[in-house]
Amino acid sequence: MPHQLIRKLEHFVALSPSDKEALVTIVRRPLRNLCKGTDIISEGETAHFIRILLSGWAFRYKKLGDGRRQILSVVLPADICDTNLFADIEIDHSIIAATPLVMVEIPHEEINKMVAEFPALREALVWDLQVSMGLLHESIVNIGQRNALERMANLFCEIYVRQQMIGIVEGSTCHFPLTQADLAAVTGLSTVHVNRTLQEMRRRSLISLVGKSLRILNLPELKSVALFNPAFLHLSKPAKDRAAGIQPIINHAAADIVAA
Amino acid sequence: MPHQLIRKLEHFVALSPSDKEALVTIVRRPLRNLCKGTDIISEGETAHFIRILLSGWAFRYKKLGDGRRQILSVVLPADICDTNLFADIEIDHSIIAATPLVMVEIPHEEINKMVAEFPALREALVWDLQVSMGLLHESIVNIGQRNALERMANLFCEIYVRQQMIGIVEGSTCHFPLTQADLAAVTGLSTVHVNRTLQEMRRRSLISLVGKSLRILNLPELKSVALFNPAFLHLSKPAKDRAAGIQPIINHAAADIVAA
DNA sequence: CGTCCCCTTGAATGAAGTCAATACGCGTGG
DNA sequence: CCACGCGTATTGACTTCATTCAAGGGGACG
Image 1: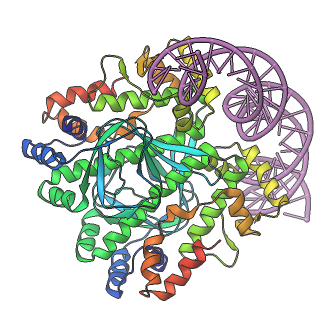
Image 2: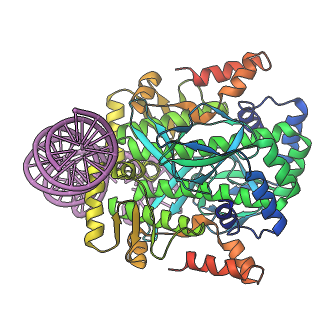
Image 3: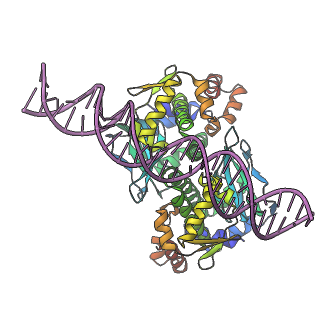
């Protein structure tokens, strides 16, 4: 499982074997298994550790006083649930398991020890946090400016590319366990309209979504419909590093991701 | 000017006189004056320092390929423009001066030196960053779930409370230099609908907005219409500290803010 | 005095929401 | 093996909220 985390972080910063070793070591601890629907963190709690998702999906969300709910972002395997990496802090939102999931909890003091010894890992984690913020930015633009079709297209692009970063897509197909009601809560649309928009996307042969499996039928067209912009992935700097020959293998992977 | 920054940070963490002194010292450097409409940072640039707004307002925004623009957040005096405090990183959005403004640029190395010597300041800055993320969360909920009236009401609450935190409101009145077109770009509405919603708010005697001045006529009602939730301000922990008697003066100020 | 920007207004249009009924699996248990 | 229930997906008809288009008004400023 830590392979996915390593794979993701290597998109940001080159990691030495000892960096990776440190990462594997710190993740080797009791796992927590949660059922779908369980709260991982609730608004108002104080986090004393960072939680890393090893498998399964989760939702970061907030509720309005009258019960309306908005999903802020989708948390995928190898993602860090907490927005503060190095210190205890109270959180302003909740996270709930969208599927059964496995995670580890690492106390801040251990993270701090680790990054003190392995500066590349600090850099990688900070970079990862910037990507999380970038996702929030994209989400605001998405909901504020894009119409239903563009919004959904953009979401599918985002999820697909993020899964590509951790190496769990197979060709044009990836896992996608969300219901239409989930999609509605992510995009700020109604379930009915999500349903109709999905039909429109199928009619246009952009995607197929059966069971829990998403297949991108026409990625260039999907990206174009979505006005998709992968800038939030913050890949360029390490892409440059790699272009200089530091990590040719990853370079190739990054090229896949940013390519149209 | 640094008073406002100190005042804001004291809402998060108690600062000693030497902490404050360090803050004043680091801010004492050449000021940059920018005209309204000038870009402070553009998407794709790499930030080598953090920029602190001393006076004036700015917009954090992203553009879609076809020109549509969404404002991600409003940057107020005493706010930090950059989302990465301690290291150079490429940014995924732009910031533009919404009014004429004054700011300082502090190299990351100096910030790092400062927080190494004054840990309370590190804690305060990290806390401030969490509030920025909280604002993004609120913004997603706002645009995704609230209707036009609720959205605008929420925005006015947010701006009012944030200005209260830096001590620049006078009674129920505060500065508000945005045009209706700006409001539209923040809320994801059209300018026409912003105009009509403002009329509705005036009709209901919630606010008055003349010139560049916002007056809250009925704060409880405005908060209730907005389903306003100040949790994103992350005030509770230090509020508890202060309740323990550490900083009675600020305690009082915090009480003002969180009070209905 | 004209120009530009911002605000305001009306009318028509359109995108998305709501309501309500129906259909489809799928697992459970009789 | 079938009946039942439950969550999820689909559909139609209608409503509503918000956008678009277009025009007019007011004030600041050169």
